[in-house]
Length: 225
Image (tube, rainbow, N blue to C red; front, side, top):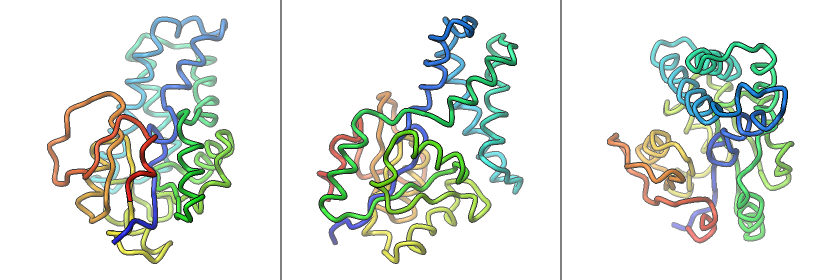
């Protein structure tokens, strides 16, 4: 059956999670990030994800903003940074993450073909609203779905259930797109057609599901039908 519904992870897939640290590092008042920002960005993202997994298996769900702050605090301490101003600035910028350059045209192409487009993210509704607004892509999305509605982080199957519940489509009609190998694996196991956006050229995760497509970026998503 042809694809009808294109669903995207948000952070790291549509939005560049390294952009906050990269931008702050260029600001004179945050000179402490000048050389450390790549490590801070990497550690921040890693801990943010790890905390979602640990909270999911421990049944200790919280708002994604909490794990975002907790992950940043770990990353700053790990890299010897203690400036409250730097912490505040990084968190401010996380609400304004830039979309990857190919995102608007890719979504415009899908919408011109009459496809349904949506975000399915660990992010809280207010965080996602801020990112979508900042990137100017709200008119290109039919909905923005947050795990906050089911109270558990991905890759729990209840999160992927939200797509069918919202759009009334079977999993086989959905292309789920994520830059996270574990998320792509979870979605593939669930039954979605799945594309892993492997921008960093990493090895395939050895997990319980395998994405059907591996892409260097989002440019060719509309070609997958």
